[in-house]
Amino acid sequence: YLLGVGSHFFKGKKILITAGPTFEPLDPVRFIGNHSSGKMGYALARRAAALGAQVTLVSGPTNLELTHPNIVVKKVTTAQQMLQETLLYYDEMDIAIASAAVADYRPETVSEEKIKKSEENLTISLVKNPDILKTWGERKKKQFLVGFALETTEEMHNAKVKLEKKNLDLIVLNSLKDSGAGFQHDTNKVTLITRTAVAEFSLKSKSEVAADIFDFIESHYIP
Ligand code: CTP
Ligand code: CA
Image (cartoon, rainbow, N blue to C red):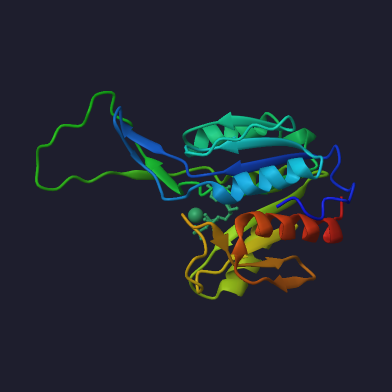
């Protein structure tokens, strides 16, 4: 999907993108994770590169591969690693997009040895992970910040709250109402929300959604 790349707006712009899930280890062989495929973030990286941007893609564990002269891929596993990796590049970025499905919690302790089976019930204590996007928002200077939101109730309201709380310029609301949207799918249905504009899109391939997002960023860019 390389139509409509005539604009020079993104040429040379530095864009940071997080993608995929994070895996939070319990012991050497187990982790807490989620079903994020990374497809949306990789589609964003591909589109940005096609538009001439310099892309740094910080990716959690996925099956996806990406080789493009304009894209540097940094692989990480945990939320803490993802945060540390992004902070190496964040300050020099023009645009930063958080599409990763970051685990909100991680096991409080990671056992050095494989946890043995013993009692009938096992309780695992979890602690909160850092919020990568919120951290970006707190140290925002020139960056145009884009977040994603997956909501099941009061979608619009909750997305707008996230836009404010994380100091974002744009939030991409994933609609769960249409089957075929979101995790593990090749399609997505999104609503793009800024402080002054709302645009609802139909169910599309993730590469088309990526194109819509960059078109929208271009027309709502305030550096
Ligand atoms: N995000 C992040 N770091 C986290 C959690 C979320 O960078 N530790 C980013 C996601 O990549 C996404 C946005 O924040 O762009 C919103 O994620 P979401 O899970 O919808 O919101 P949360 O703030 O985690 O709140 P909740 O899960 O309670 O709705
Ligand atoms: Ca979350």
